[in-house]
Image (cartoon, rainbow, N blue to C red):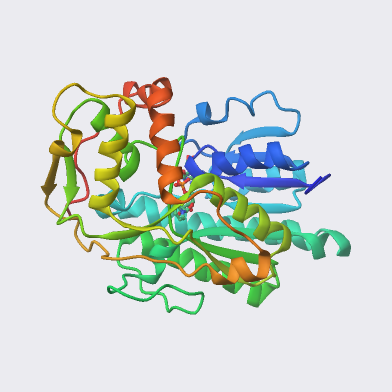
Length: 354
Ligand code: NAD
């Protein structure tokens, strides 16, 4: 079994991607998994119901900015690897309140690196050689593309939002802890994820939930911004592979070659909803309206995943059509999950206009 006998910290394990990683680790590996999460507004332990009683799972409510708490967790569990997914992740929120993004994404990553280094230096030489720190980042650090071209691992960083700038800063810290202190780090930059358990503020779940209620579907700007979509389970699979076989000090771009304009995505969601749950009224496409664009809205992201495909043999299982159909179906079948978030007071009002 993969990762048999190892202990892996997953920070941000109650979030969208972190919970997918934990579900994957518990079902497809023998690792003991420790979910280290502060439980911000974006966290949801309901995404991990199957994990709660699992003999190889532990949850620790812990902020990655707090050294003392982290140090005691490293001493308690003696992890063999850290997968860092804890972050503030919503661009619109970063426009209105960048401080939390600098604090968690930059200072938090720094604090986690320091505690991982402290732990790593005390390991036996064999364990030290096997230890890994995998930092999960985004394609947004590369800035915006024109109509052609792809981001590669060599593309210079040019972040445009407080979110992407904070992620870029954290990526640089991770790289430098490897170069300066020898900590065995790896870095992944991934395109936009979607899938089950996605927090309702992000484009795809936001539109599904509004579409289900036959509410207006507000698309930013002209809807022509392009994102490269990756089904979250494929991302989790890629992260496990990078942790298992990735080269220390290497960076891997992850994407599924699924570029779509935001308008295309919303139109497809409307059509899927009409197929699954016909509203009886006009087609849901008629609910689409265009609203003021996000300030500094990057026009196009597109990943070249050639390196992870060639070197690690990774391939996504879902294309955009199959992944989106599964996602829309999941949100239709799991209303209790997202209704719980709305009932806890999550407001769907427009934010991030600067
Ligand atoms: P998310 O917002 O759904 O979850 C983030 C999790 O981190 C939450 O459970 C939250 O409680 C936790 N957290 C936040 N601050 C913390 C702190 N100070 N200490 C401990 N835990 C804290 O995010 P996500 O979409 O799952 O993204 C996970 C990672 O992947 C992030 O680093 C993000 O930048 C990166 N990423 C996301 C996408 C995407 O499309 N969602 C794409 C590429 C990369």
